[in-house]
Image (cartoon, rainbow, N blue to C red; front, top):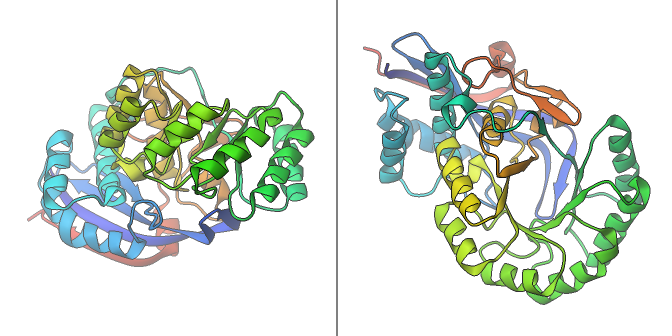
Amino acid sequence: MRITKAHLYLVEFPLKEPFIISYATYPNMPAVILKLETDTGLIGYGEAVPDEHVTGEHVSGTFEILKNVLLPQILNQNPFDIEHIHYLMNSTIARNPAAKAAIDIACYDLMGKAANQPVYNLIGGRAHENIQYAKVLSIEEPAVMAEKALIAKNQGFSSLKLKVGVDDSGQDIARINAVREAVGPAMPIRVDVNQGWKTVGHAIGVINQLQDANLTWVEQPILMGDLRGLAEIRQKTSTPIMADESVHNMEDVLEIIRLQAVDFINIKLMKSGGIYPAVQMAKAAESAGIIAQIGSMVESSVGSAAGYHVVMSRRNIQSAELTGPLLFKEEIGDLNFEPPYVHLTDKPGLGITVNEQQLNKLTIKSASLDRSE
């Protein structure tokens, strides 16, 4: 089996309401959808959702990198040779993990379809009976977040993730306490600062003021890359700490292990380069007793399904937050959400059907490469 054709679609997914985190507000979500065809007639889909604030990629650049740099290297390759495909990609261009993730995901979709197996059976099998996801609340006024949290609880969600860090920490404390009061003492609440508290001393002070909120963890309170700072925060607070923007690749995981910097890591396919490296990172974390989560860059059903297959395959991945499809007014896939669960099927590959009519409707720019002749 050989990859013979590639089709790229630069799309914008319209959001039901703006998604607000500490460093950006998104009125819609841009992405690049990749469609690979093989000489056996199989079709596989991948997705890239770059974040210039985290991976240093912009969606327009990702489109061009895929078109002009990466895809010419992997056409005529066998998608089962995923180790070699990653070698080719990494040898051709450094970093660009979201672009590489699109190819990786599409290859796994093809592998699953060729083997007549869901992707999770190719990377470890079924390690969980079911998968739950948290309700993610973007940054708003304390009363609004509290109201939305209570609605989520009544809808059946079993945990909440609160985005904070956009303004003064007093407002963040008010947001968190308002939500805790609204949902009661038992519901798990995790807080994602997205680097917004910036300095170690400031973060320690804020976290220590939140002890009564009984938080499951505080995620990435300071600027990415400061692993020693995360280690100091962990030593001087009692609330568990998660690294997100500081975890891009295996080197980051190994340094986190060496420094004993955090209790949890948030692995994202768009940061790591796809399913193959994400699984490796999760295994390394497991060896050090670190619990992993598969997080979201607000992907469609394509990228979200890929992430959930990784979750299903690893026992030490105990959390997931891939909720992009629920935030969109219009989508291209049919990943099945039933709060608080997402249901992966046993269909081959990613297990989703892509609506190409909807894909074309949302497309701003497209390109194709053909090596079938």
